[in-house]
Length: 66
Image (cartoon, rainbow, N blue to C red):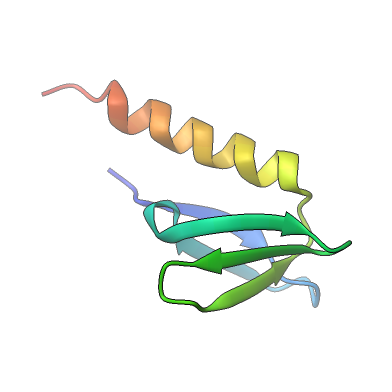
């Protein structure tokens, strides 16, 4: 099971992050994700899109077959 979500940096490079490490997501107006490690990431996706990816991830792990 993948613990990651794929996002896009402002320079169009792709990155994947562990969705479990997300502490906050804010629009400043860029989308800034703060991880539990206090590392900050700025991404192209808007807040709603990041939240949707996290929700999809959470649904996948909640309903995984045993």
